[in-house]
Image 1 (cartoon, rainbow, N blue to C red):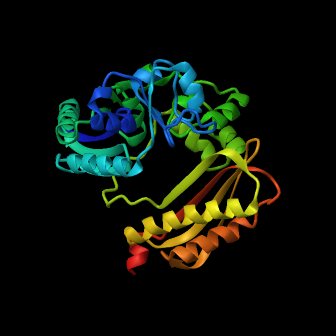
Image 2: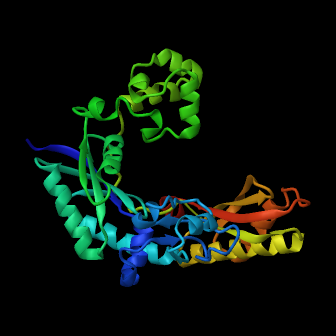
Image 3: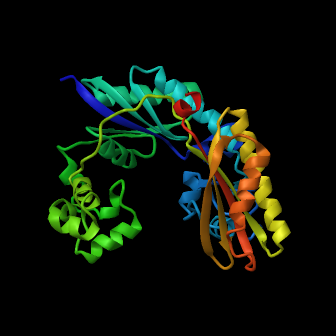
Length: 348
């Protein structure tokens, strides 16, 4: 029977896969990508790892030094965001060539809306199209809403296809922990555990009034709907544009001189301003992230009086925000984020 489906496409080990495409001799070897790619830098961290490296316990966010100890034979590479953006654009172009509605959800994933009697066959067609166009493998989750489709992709990896709908939701998900759901992280999982809710089945059976009293009139019932497998079905096909861009640097040694800290923030802000100007985007808000030694992180921001792509103005705003931080403590990481106005606002 022909009906509407949601498919979720997720590129397998995307960043590592792009690097391996550029270096075919690395295929089958453990590959770790992160910041400068130098595992001797004390504070460099893993951005992604190939499946071969993950078998040794290497994970995103892990210090490169730890990754080296766990997998000394790994190949360490520097991160190259422009290459990943270009590969992502090729993937999305390949998806749009298939008779589906495409909602880009990030570099390496997209939701697809389709009307078909055989979603598995369509999913296999999508995998072949992406592989032929880019050389990249993807996993495809099939669902009757976005939530179930995205969770299905996790069961499909690597390079597989899996269907999760209302028909098999309870059998597949009931006894899994609540943080298996899309939208519930570790912190909320702990909060739910304090209410005696540990599994998906318990969340689905929870009293909405009690959830609302504990977590709020909107969020409480929403968490129960997640437990039931609920989720949206709308596919937004307007071209995807990032609402913000950010850059950050972790320093091998703490910065203590205010002039050095200001110089780094100024440089990050100007890099982002250049990116904004090159893509004709206007910046409306500037945020600065500071991680003090040993590990306290704070973020502050300001809204510009007039949107701009001028490097001097954006850098000046970042320095104004920087002045709101304690200037007497050693700094181990600095970051700057710029937020853009929407394209429709910019053209108005």
